[in-house]
Image (cartoon, rainbow, N blue to C red; front, top):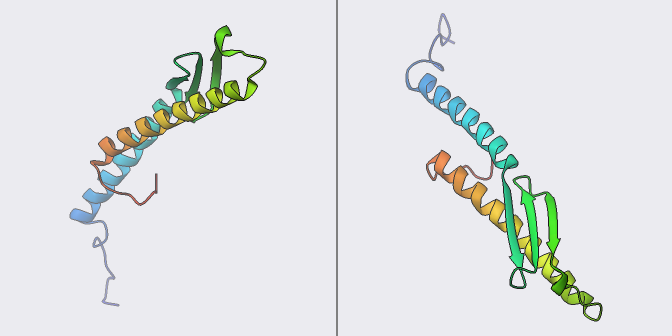
Length: 114
């Protein structure tokens, strides 16, 4: 190693600026993720007879079922409507999260890191 080592080289100039930009992006991502977790996404199925609401963490918050959706002779249909509504609400949350992340990263693919 040269006398005096590599003083200043790793953090100098462009590298320091890149590190600051990465840190800023990380802080913005954390803030955005927190905001997204507080958002709610609703979707319905069966023409609106079943509505599911999830939060940004993809946790089911509520299910609303209109009386006309309840047919004791066709419980399977109601189950299918609930599954469809929940899956669509989760899909909406994921789509919004992905779009927000893409805006933040400028479309840069981070390889699933976030």
